[in-house]
Image 1: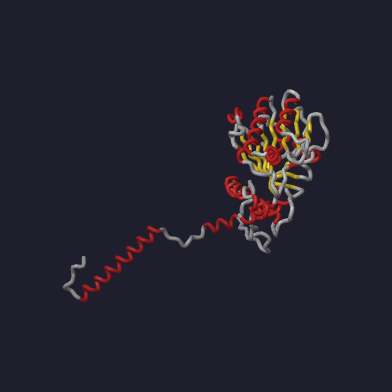
Image 2 (image 1 turned 30 degrees about the vertical axis):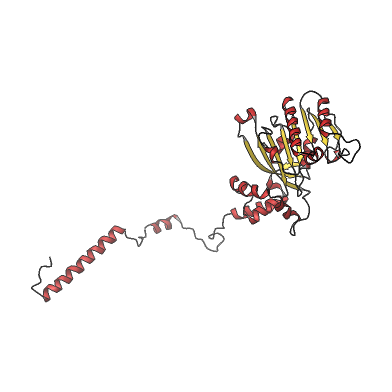
Length: 341
């Protein structure tokens, strides 16, 4: 699976999509591009935090926008239980495939007033999506990490999209010598990337710290996609896949990491290292190559080399001769000592 297939809704078995932003990078550009793709599936967009204009630019028949920005419990006189209004809108939706989009789970949990009740309500929405024809799905955007939402007990299938600033990969390549795949093996990359990216404070420091640019990137970002397949799809492929891609906010399209301008130095440095060393015999003022006759003459020159066994035999023979000569001299000086053999 890839971001491109996700945007074109070519994965009907993925019933739950979770977009996760952070204080250093927003996933709204990808969600906006997803909603911009025209489809025969009816879409219900519930805006709890962001104005509808931030997510959809053109009014279309296949997208129904429900603006709840003014319905704040405790602050507005017409505030109602947001769960009741969402269920009522779903019941009025046309029959067939349906996409339910909630722009902020954090705001939803704040309006409901209980995390447990919020998860219970979202689980009810997952059941509604499962009862609808394919490719129905629930799409939720959040800023706060929600570990319970990525568990298989919440939804068998999952597409979890998390975004990061490009400086994260630059930092890992520089300080940890771990550039993204395929520059290093995937197991090595994930073993460094995952624990570091889960520490949000570290990423925020890279962006807002003394050496950071002070704001999230407005041109490109890094996207981590975790896909868990459920049901019949697991028999045809790996049950869990994880990969990383780039996203261009200038063109609103997914791109390869090597195409990101902020990561070009990483890939150019790798190409420089992989270039073969220049041949020292090239570009000299004389010819070092031998002709065939010269190579044949060089092959006939005997090498100063003796086999190890031959050297041992010669050394043994020399030692034996020295012993015999010594004994002969002893015999001549002392005739009685003649039993040397």
